[in-house]
Image (cartoon, rainbow, N blue to C red; front, side, top):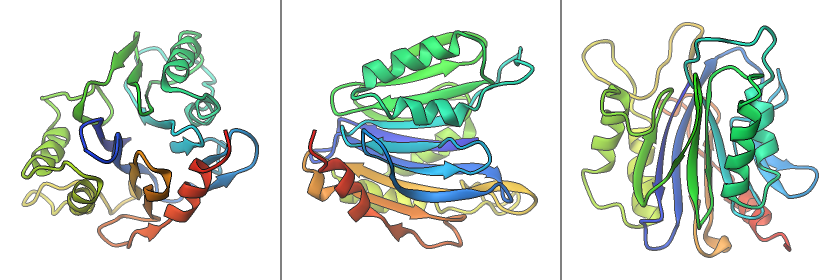
Length: 248
């Protein structure tokens, strides 16, 4: 699972702003985001168990992320959803990436999944559950967990939305400042509703804050390699800027 917020084409200096918490088994081996070999240039983390990724950005400014989604009929040997997420980062634009995701999901080879594909001109969420559907991203704030985009019945989505709309977040700095506090908010039993889950074998394993602005030299990537309520964010912006400045 995950919880993801994307502010799309509504901040004055950055078409894409993202906050994301990944939820997995704590003992699942993971490599932190780095620049991957091959073309196009891509920065993403790697799931060492299956070899795919849960989120990344390529040199064309294409952002892709994957999230679980319920699905009634599962294939006996599903192909890794993270591998498809990594493949989507080979495209130069969100439209082609979303179309490819829908085509692949229609083969029935995958467990339930949502894919977010966004660049500065177009954004979409591809539902890969019991049916395949492409949902266009409109301007503004959107929140996704393991179901539909902007689902008012989802309490976690509503908590994120409420926290991110308490003040005007019309710049990358403003969004990331509030998002870092929101996505680091721990859950305290039944007293305090939170975003971060710890304890047991499964929970929030990492967190990412991302800004893809109009000028690549101002891009921001911050990554917490553990629950952000306990683990500081590391600044990986230099790596992201290197990817975005690659000659097209």
